[in-house]
Image 1 (tube, helix red, strand yellow):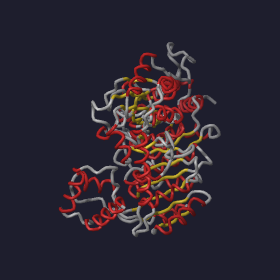
Image 2 (spheres, helix red, strand yellow; image 1 turned 90 degrees about the vertical axis):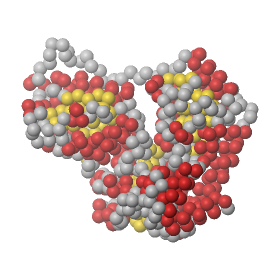
Image 3 (cartoon, rainbow, N blue to C red; image 1 turned 45 degrees about the horizontal axis):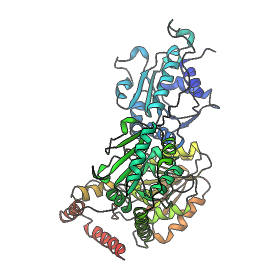
Image 4 (tube, helix red, strand yellow; image 1 turned 120 degrees about the horizontal axis):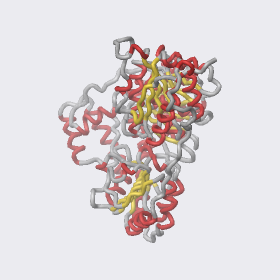
Length: 584
């Protein structure tokens, strides 16, 4: 039987090493699905319940495996639905290939069913964006798309009209210039190491600093040994951007944890006080948490030269993969005799962890969200994969879920979109069967993609889902109060019994309402054979306080209360109790 465009497409994907596709069927891609059916032993199709989740899952797959993530959607609405997840991949610089259908090739632009110009729609999100014209065309454009996605760390898009998918090679002869076999399914991996003079200049800056702070991001994943060696030699604390949470374990003597609104006070202190900043695999965007320009000299390591100096003026930029660059740099860094800066950071971190423990063991009712996160942490095995949704839940996950061993962690970074947690968990469980996968979600984010619980049930993925339910869009509520000085408005959510929903889907559901029951209920969920969900009812008035509160934030907070915040008395009581705990 003659090969069709779809056959050639999928065979080439397999040649590239792709073995998983996330998607949802539709009449605009039926030709591709027939080819998927006949290759189901080589190419696994994971059916999600909404195309947005397919793109999220492809992004999560890329994040956790370091490989190309692939998602598939039908014409028109299917392609539109992919966009949010694809922007997540774009903004976190993940290699994802999106394949979409289109209406019949000779009805494009004729006001026909599902005739949406996805090529035009994807112009901003994609680094490569092309319509496939037939079997003679598909290999070349697929190779181009994958190479662009991998080399530029972004989204590539191929749009294939539904009738073109079923055209055979015999019906689409090649032009005389398109000679078969001249495009390769391989990508040369460029791993430059900076010249010796740049390495020596970087080492001179580090050696000359008295207070060296090291800021690591996602690009430093896999560099634990090198980062800790640098921290030991420079006697400097390791501060972690959110997506770099797993670069070094949280029990490392060198780290002060995260940075930013959901980070730690010791990390903020390290940034404020350092005279030398080493940025490794990060372009941390929240510059108000970085040293004031001119205060610190900076060495930055990044694979992308366009990122050097993007957030902080770099005195020396080292372009290349972080690990080989660090390996070349380390012999030039002199061991520091004075360890006062690191020891001060370590002492502050001990105090910070003690404060977290106090909040995380609170017996109060309503239950504090910190209690849930602290107890979940105690059950995580050393190879767990943690997927955090976005909202106040991200703060509790960032602070209380401690990376150790071979654990992995991710969230939606720059896009900071809600709804990513569950699809990420689907991807992680598919990519790593047998490993513990945890989704930490708020009730707002969970309800955006809650139908993916059915995906987890269908494939019997052993994902443990913990919903921090405060019946409000907590992050937005506190932004309205603390940043804007306004009473909360429009953030209250109608309560949902998520445990009953889980049972309706076919997953074991639990409800947790009291701190005294946390260890028992969460333990039962972890001991459940297969997926489980815990509906954790928590205090809606527990604020995700930053490491240090600014004068402006305190002023706006007071202003919102005076202007009539409806929960002001409960908020005041909560904040006062938290402050008393800090003093004690």
